[in-house]
Image (cartoon, rainbow, N blue to C red; front, side, top):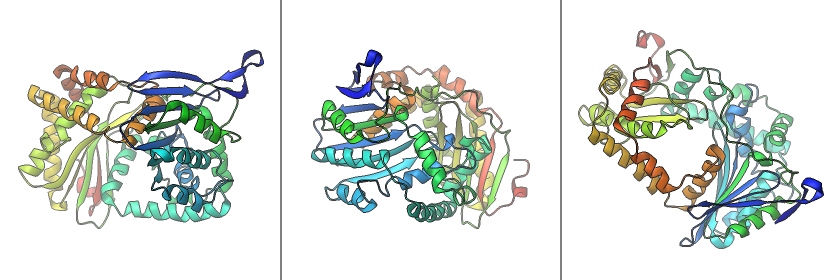
Length: 443
């Protein structure tokens, strides 16, 4: 396979293909864009995703929300299709398209019958590579996004996680809202958004992933045809390496943030700094998280909900980025029960930090990690996501058996060590509910 790009001594640059195991293959185009696929002949569907290694942490404060703005705009029309045609062509074959933005990447995806994969490739590549970003569409979507921001503020159970993240990372891009704010989205111009699009959406940071009843060579051929003549059909370049971060992310001193809202429930998140996604301790943390608050048998669920009925929802979680992370415990409860819920949570975290967890709990935690991972690979969409994230975030595809082996290899000492490290640290508290700051003074 060749392209019109020229390599050394004027020779046509060639695409490079490689088997990744587990039925997966990767082809790197001369432009640096990567195509990864997994053939699953037993299915009659195919999932396709265009993953761009650009997210909200890549924005300046003035451009906060630009990646999310683009997520909306790239489906609004290209030189070949109107917004209606983009959606109608996929829906006419019973398929679906959507997109989402995170702090470190943006994904545009489609799911169709296997026979309609050529259509999905053509439509999705066209939308991502050749969007017009019409000024009128910018104004329309600005209104939609401002409504989305307002709607999010009406969901205190969601808002509290953003408050907590900001409490940990402050004004670092990781601490900002993915959507941006009314103050950043309102003045953003079409020129600024289009400039961000053309500067940031380049071939080396893009991975196109597909999984389902497909042939790798066919997908590569379809993608190259769809890319021809677009801005992503560029000259020779090396693929971007996985994001690692240039320096350690500075975090805030532990403190309490309260957002006063007239709600029937109080929503709280208690936690602190975690670990990055490349940290080898992530497997031990996964086990610990399940023991603490990962399911109905977890310590926090049993102590707070089952024994005392203080909260309907209580769980722990870990968020991991290239160079940073956080660990938190969420609970939603009646405002009058907040103090008791926080006291019980703090006591349980301190108990685990000091005494560790039992072998039985570790065994159960390992089973939960492995089960959720394998059961999460039951459809083509999740298999496609696995391919793309492995390539974009880690630079390699870890075989399922290898990953399960890494979980099995976690020792009690490793789990207890990370528990002592993360759970004994001073913690921040985020609260959304009918309170003022004084209500949590000293907590």
